[in-house]
Image (cartoon, rainbow, N blue to C red):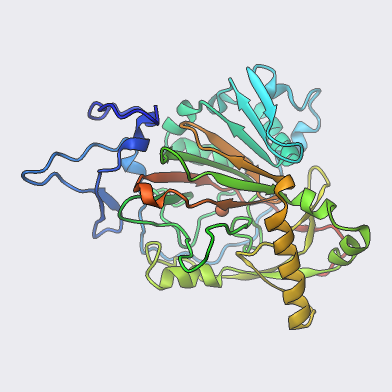
Length: 384
Ligand SMILES: [Fe+2]
């Protein structure tokens, strides 16, 4: 288990053992892929890393701009099921993490879900914002072809413009940190690693149902924070929400691209960064719930407001999101955990508190795109 220190056999390393294997040296190869360092004379052979085939690769490929596509949310189909929560019937444990978001499930194997169960899963994640499935080694070990098939069921897979991916699988977004390297978007000159965001909200059609899991994790630390943007909106007064519904904001991928262009995170920008305008309050296409849709990482300004008005309003909203501990959940990544969240109605932040341990943290995200955000205010013009 993650806390053990026993030696593991070559090539049969249980996934749960990876947390302690911190001596492995990984170096960039000329092709842009991380590789295990070969054993050197007089030094012990490096231990084999079970998920070495999923280490980040930074190809120099160039991608054209994304094109619009019609997203049909699988959750709609589940609304017609006699019991849209039937997929939970065989779970051994279903526990709500908080009243506002998050459900933790034991006893189900996501990898074996049929289409009806996948539809119900999409609807339930939309309703709860966040679902945490434990004991998913089968899912994790099925590998990148399966990850692609899984994600494609829920929408067109987003290919990240700057992140590392397993070689030949650009649709799988990787986060990676070990004793020697970090390929994450991490700001080092801040007093906190907390940066609330909704993934790639700068895209015209940002992600919807998102799947994330760790292939290796530190013994402790590296948790992830989540918050319900439905709940943060509900905390505000009706008059203020009515005003927010009339607003739209610019979301930008420029800073993230510049981070890579400066040589960090693999140093590649495969698709030119984009900026898009989204409603400040969006409506979920299936549940109809309204959610606040601004985030500190990617939202830049409110369209039509004076600079000071925009900055003051966004600062207030970010502060509200930051401080609302009563609306948040925190996921601890015990081995073989798979988490799904609805990126349209939640925000999240990494917690980088494990750097001192030098332990490896290696995660994979499967990121289907959703619809263009629907304004809560009917008829809101998003053209400029
Ligand atoms: Fe994220």
